[in-house]
Image (cartoon, rainbow, N blue to C red; front, side):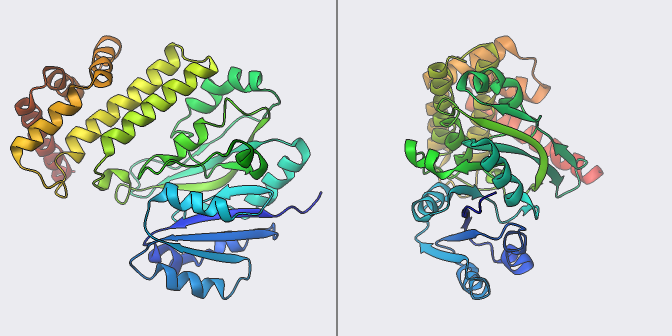
Length: 351
């Protein structure tokens, strides 16, 4: 087997805790050694940059890029522009990559000449709220776009814990550059929009059952704990991007329509019940009401609420919210939000 260079791209923002704990040991100690490790510091305000420099002094394969804060998508695009490896791998600093991840993927890439690999991963809930589990993909060599399309929904889209991540994918850089794929400059869920553009263009995709990554799910520190000014617009963009890609690829059917509508429904709830009431959203009650109604008045939202009401049996909470959303009754939305938040707090106190 040849020994091609692999570019590992890691975007960093205020992650001194993880850098101090591991010093990128899982990346630097890969069994495959021909690596280009590109660290993109996205305008960190803590000690991230200085710690990166300390680690880089111990490993000449590390390159550090410091840029103004622009979000994860912007940071990853910066890394892509600098990458020179034959293959591209993205990893997240708060997870763990297994020692043979790169070696295994390079071997499969070189043997199959695939454009992308999807590999399996381990899931750990940091708060122990659920048992650990493996998300395992079948061993599949899909050597045409028609074969990829045939397997996409069941094997790639409808996967437990999702499959929009970039960290369980291994990419051909030539393929990325051929189509000039880049991340959108969103604060959340950039991975999915980056990956969804690949599938209609791929001619060779390989899935492998090897568990090569450990994914930690945190209740704090995730995108639900941050105020994002354009949260709704991002969810709407994701909805429309998926719909457009599925339609152009010829797979806009009952399963994919349901998938994107359920995702959009959850996004609508997050945008109104979480984002609109976040302490960092400095707005008076009159303007808050106008903001909520402006979301609920959008044609895409109205169609989504109608779809959900006709096709899904919702939990009690969601039924109440759906009814209040459909009526654009902000007072009722606030009432139910207060009730359910209080019940949630009482439940936590009892448990």
